[in-house]
Amino acid sequence: MVELGIYEYSSIKEIKGALLVVEKVRKIAYDEIVEVIGPDGEPRIGRVLEAGEGYAIIQVLTGTEGLDVKTTRVRFLGETLKIPVSIDMLGRIFNGRGEPIDNLPEPIPDDYLDVNGEPINPASRAPPSEFIQTGISVIDGMNSLIRGQKLPIFSGSGLPHNQLAAQVARQSTIPGRSEEFAVVFAAIGIKHEEALYFISEFEKTGALANLTLFINLANDPVAERLLTPRVALTFAEYLAFQNDMHVLVIITDMTNYCEALRELSVAREEIPGRRGYPGYMYSDLASVYERAGRVYGKKGSITQMPILTMPGDDITHPIPDLTGYITEGQIVLGRDLHEKGIYPPVNVLMSLSRLMKEGIGKGRTREDHANVQSQLYASYARAQDFRALATIIGESGLSPTERKYLRFADMFESKFLSQDIYENRDIEQTLEIAWDVLSILPEDELTRIKPEYIRKYYKGGS
Image (cartoon, rainbow, N blue to C red; front, side):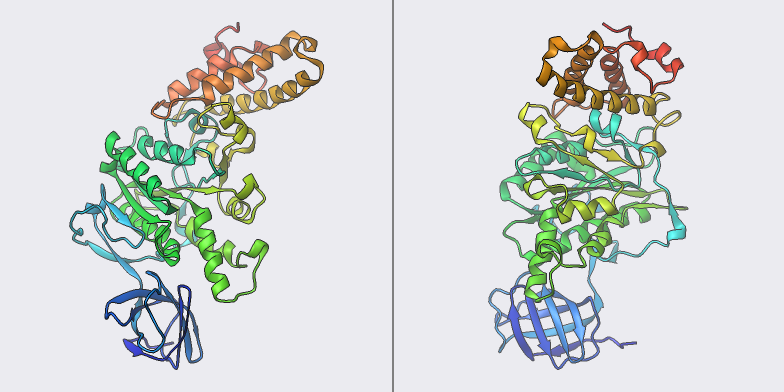
């Protein structure tokens, strides 16, 4: 075992991008935190990315601009990176390193926690359960978010994922729970105007009181992008497991995170994997996503909703592909719906919440919820087939029932899917709208709903 301590070296071999190579070192460890001291005498924070025999590769979190190999010194501190945490951080805005940027004093810390988190014993993990109400019908009704789940949003360039993320952050609650609910919002590599949008949205709606923002801007150091989600999740773990709070962590945009990972991998001259991304990207993403969950004996929980933009709307791209393997479903935004003016433009047939049935139904949302979700999905899929057929033979060539499916699809998109960005629907409203739409179809077409629910909720067709 390496006996760590404070050691200082000036044997800098090379500075390359955000990386710094130090020679003739000893008694260092992977992920150890360092201070990099340049000609100006101001220490910069870094961490050990690779510890070898007599050398170390340092990732400088605040960038290497102004450093040179002759005058730069590196001080190894003998510990991993820890951040101060406090309940007073709720309602505050921080940069990607956890430093306040809202012109308010630094919170007095209650504790210092490792940004890498503490692994949860698999035997201590409680299965995700309990419904989180986002107020958005297409999520609550058809792709329900469950407490302790990780449910990503797959978007594309120009689609309204920022608006959707802000709406989820503003509106999310756990109905009927006495424990406090908080949102931790991490923004990675976003533009300045995007940051202003999020801040103004949360301030004007009063949502900032139970929300903490960690913002890494596009002009911030690339290395900081890899730190931002870990800082946010460390604070979320403090709220959940030391303060018994239910925490929803929203991370946008994980594509920027992966691009930073690829950039640093290129600087290290590593052998690339798919499309130039490092081969360890799967395990690196898992180290972020797997920090969601519930623990037996703890009242609090962490639920994750990471957001990524698919390059070229390609769902087979390595970033969405690997994310889909790790997480429990996905919500996919569709460009065709967006072009129709529908918000949120969720492609229902490509979206899935694998843990939905663990948190809905009798005693949780409503007894008919699972049946309604299944029927909506099946009917919309069938309606899409009839739409395709109508483009070939014309609507007049369809049967009366098939034409009702076309009407159902139009109403489903305009009434159920579509809602205002500030419209907050509870689950009862969502299910009532679903029955309004389903009642367009003949009763004998509702093959996925129990007869007692049809008798109770079906509205007679039209």
